[in-house]
Image (tube, rainbow, N blue to C red; front, side):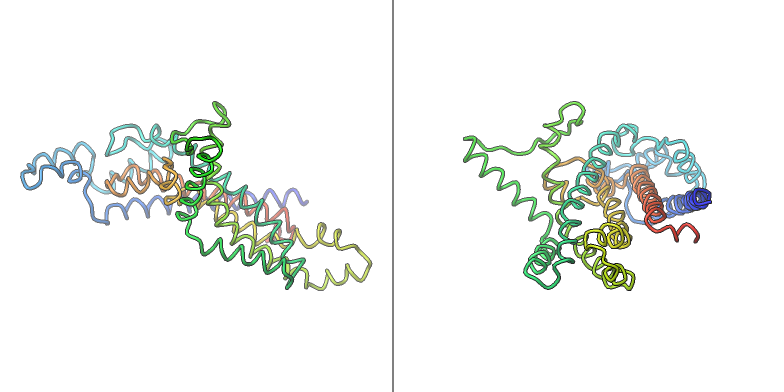
Length: 328
């Protein structure tokens, strides 16, 4: 019976993904046609006032911008369904090739930053809740507030500066993280030496939020009646924490982690700029600058798809942590 309810719950959540993706596709397509900017003008901006209008029309014809909106929308949605986003309007290269390396970099950075967030936030949040209003709690809250208040670009610059100073002192020459991305399957240590630093920057900043959420959620659960009942029955604090308190307090924490992972996939623009990483966030900014409609639409749909998939996993984790959700 429980498995059947869980399967029905999963099927409903999967079906809800379809209108979400469709709505995102419609929204991004028509928004791109409303905002100002013309990629053909950007291509030939060096010509100034001497630009031939016929050349502009030829450029728009080649890119399909003169076609009716419903025809353009049909081509876009057909490409989304077939995972063929066409070619970049700016570079002329297939979008899949443009995204291949950048998606791998952004995905790995998002996973590493999420792991750093969990390793920092969950233990600190638990300790702060169990040692409420002690010097340990105040220290953890101070670290968390510092993480929220500290700009990520400033922390990234401090890390790079520290690496330069320490490597000069210890190795005799300055060292900086590699610029070019290498798959961890090809060169694991070279890959880690490049991405561990931006992962620490992004992970620490958002660990501050998760730490405070973990602390407040655990404190709320520890005040519940069933926790007092468990203590009155003589259960140890370790059993109460592991069997009852942690599992029920993780629901809001998992929500925040899911939201942050989706943000990590395309929102680390400043961190990528500081560490000179060619990820999805940086590509999105460049595409907006050049009014590359095809690239922007593809990037937004990828980020939306990742967000929807992560939310699905979060919903499934809800059903695992709290069986009552399966009946809703």
